Length: 93
Length: 143
Image (tube, rainbow over all chains, first blue to last red; front, side, top):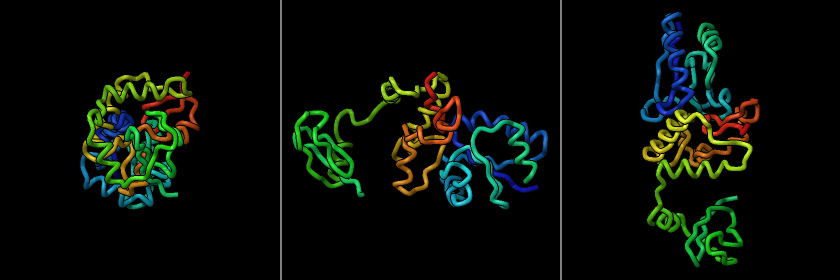
């Protein structure tokens, strides 16, 4: 199973809304997301910036949170997603 | 075109742009702007009384900003509370009121695009959705 990342921000309402859905998906599927906060943890922010070329084209040309990312395939989705859409994305990784 | 700093020699208003305003919006004097250095402008902007803005003043400012526009401040108070907290955390930790739902690239010109309030009416989340809101949800289309 690929190692997936959720880049999120502590004061981002979309991230706050997605977090319980991510946890539900983890419990139901066994998939684990590395949840990396980017506004208060500079090391996580630098990691996200290092993937800018892969992330920005999929997220309105910017670095946005929440972003769900597979560092192996470089596939990413971002924003507030319905549970089923997040699940479909995660299961195909 | 490169933006430069301009100071009104009558009332010390600062303008950042490719050219100064003809009419100073504060003292109403014509052709009163002279070019100054970035350091000089920063000293004038940062050193005076009332230079800081409180979260309450910021909320009042964005309400005025949205008044009469096609967008309004999100009526979801909890969401706005969280966002304003993030905006002020980002200013304290990173220098400007960056959007808590995006991330600085560390490229100055790029990062100016994510200072709140941003130019959100060009974003796909505002243009493309019936409920239209800015990326973070601070503003929504007025009903």
